[in-house]
Each structure stands twice: as C-alpha cells, then as structure tokens.
Amino acid sequence: MLNFRKLTQQYLIVVCSGLNLCFSDDINSTGINGDIIRVIKPGVFDYSTDGLLLRMRAWGVGFPTREQPGYNRAISFTETNLIGALNEIKIRNEFDLENLKVVDITLPSRSTTFSRLAIEEGIGWHLENETNRHGFLVMAQLRAKRKSLGVWATGFDYHSTSSNLNFGANSPILPRIMSGNGALPTIRYWVTSFGKIHRPGCSFYERGRGELSSRPTGEDCRICGGTK
Image (cartoon, rainbow, N blue to C red; front, side, top):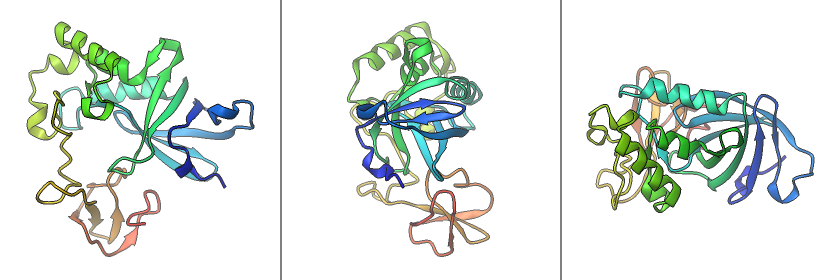
C-alpha cells in the first residue's frame, strides 16, 4: 500500500469524479483511482483512494466559518471549483496542526489557482505567514481590497472571532489547538458524550455534546483516527 506520508513536496494530478492520482516524476505510471467524496468546509475536502481517506486544505487562503458572513458563498465556491473538475494538486505541507494535508490547487480551466481565485474574488483572505507573502496572492488581495469584494465589503470583524483578515507579522490564531500560554502547540481532542474521540479537522469535531481534552479517554474515531 502506498505510504502517503512520503508525498511531501511532490505533485499530484487529480481528475475529479474518477480521480486519477499520479506522481509528477513518473506521470506515465499507473494511476490510483479515487474520488473527492465531500467538501467539509470552505477550502477543506476529503479525498478517498485505495482504501485511504485523505483530508486536504487549500494552501494560503482562509475562509469565513459557519457563523460568519460569506460562509455560504465560500462553501459554494469550493464545491464548484473542486468537485467534478480537472485539477492539479501540489502538496505544500504534509500535515498542518489540524492534521490536514496542505495543498496548492491549480484550476487549468481558469488558468489560475484555487487560492488565488478565492482571494481575488474576496471569497477568502491571504494567509501571509503560511505563504511567506507569496507575490501573486499578495496582489490578488490588494485588488480585492480596492474593489471591496466579498469579505472586504461585509464590515464584519473576522479578527475578533479568531479569523484574521490581515495576517501580517503575527501567526494565525489557533485557540483550539494551542496550549494555555500560546507557546507550545498541543492537540485538543473532542470527546463526545458517547466517548468517541475526534481530532481537529474531523467532520465531527465539536459537533453535538462533548468536551475538549488534551488527554482524552474513549474510543478513537474511525475516520480521523482520534489519538492515533
């Protein structure tokens, strides 16, 4: 079975709806069939292949959360551009702090990337620290700001609810997975009232009744792996 933990800094070719997954350095090799089975939230999706489930996140772009203005537009944008389309994916980070594989997604039909298009249209904002102020994304955000598009026209203070529209010198705020003093990153698991353990990024994280714990006890989730 293919070990996906060895895919860091390699390219993937993804053909959605009967996805074909190949290494870029051996593009003529036999592909591995799979599917994007669902969009979890804006910029985050599940990809199933060869009996494995990979959860991926778009590189360099942040989006409104469910309770914030612009969420519905962002989820629709993600579904429209990632499901049923021919896309190319480059892995930027094997796993982030929420155990998501961070990827840069090229949209050949739009001659741009998913992240750049989302930022340019004001669907989301540039995560400058993550991209080291990537030039194209910086310019895309400047254009969206000047035109007051999308998130820049709502007047909503995303920063006050932990989503910062202006990631500058400071790192993105991740209160759910940071320790009390904010110095050392520690995973806080979601333990449901039924004793199921979910890690950050799981579709069941903070859903229903339960509590957050850095030392959970119970049964690990079969989808995200829980504490494994």
